[in-house]
Amino acid sequence: MQLDDELRALDAHYRSMPPVAAMDIAIAAREGDTLTLRAPLALNVNDKACAFGGSLVSLMTLAGWGLVTLRCHQLGIDADVFVADSEIRYLAPLYSDLQATAALAGSGWAPFDDALRSRGRARVRIAATVPLPDGGVATTLRAGYAAIARG
Amino acid sequence: MQLDDELRALDAHYRSMPPVAAMDIAIAAREGDTLTLRAPLALNVNDKACAFGGSLVSLMTLAGWGLVTLRCHQLGIDADVFVADSEIRYLAPLYSDLQATAALAGSGWAPFDDALRSRGRARVRIAATVPLPDGGVATTLRAGYAAIARG
Image (cartoon, rainbow over all chains, first blue to last red; front, side):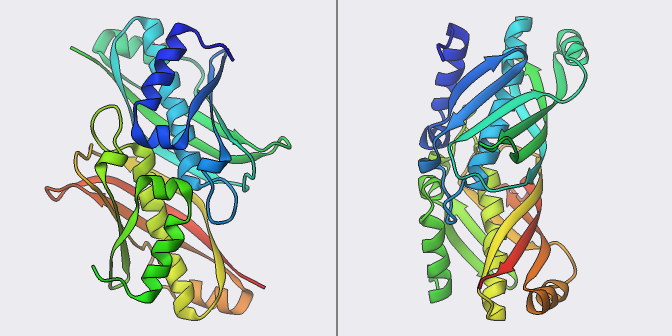
């Protein structure tokens, strides 16, 4: 995929973190209101020749973090974004390259947008999924993120 | 700490996974019925100069995985151990090296031991914590693990 300037900056931001660079995590796609990241299995493999749980969680958590960060950009608000909590389900082993797609878990961004604009801080829940090549699901995450406007 | 043969083997097992080696995760201590892992901040730092969430989750999840694996060894049962689900709370940023201690979340190993011995498979819940240097808590995890006897 050809990344636009905004996504190239986010991709570089991800890779500036040593553990993220070690997993070779990269942006795969931004489609509608979702963000998809990818990482090669070879660098993220466990002792059972499938994807390492920690890498799957990292990929899903970063996809959600990126989605919230992009939303702050859209609002024109310079904000720090933090993950506050998450729940993970490991449903099936993944024996191929990793891909995680994050999307809003609730019904819309309006409460997040309003809170960030009016109070300079806001929370939102994001859902992320790692698909299996055959159409099933390897892992799911639901996580809460906080955004706090800078300055 | 001087590791005994069993812990040296577990340490080598951890490091055989490329993403775990990249985080430089190592066994720090086995005390009573707990297992503590450590990792240096430099390889596990995020964009805010504190510990990367994915590394914290990896460290806590692997500490729990190791604790369950050691329990299987104690029972003399050769088993594969999997993480099934987890809940994470990110409570405070950590600006120093990472350390995670895992312990049994329930009241005892008896149900796990009995199920693994009689049915060849068992589940158990583990709690793990990453402390702050000042005595507070950076992150917590509660996770379910499954053990399945081989062969």
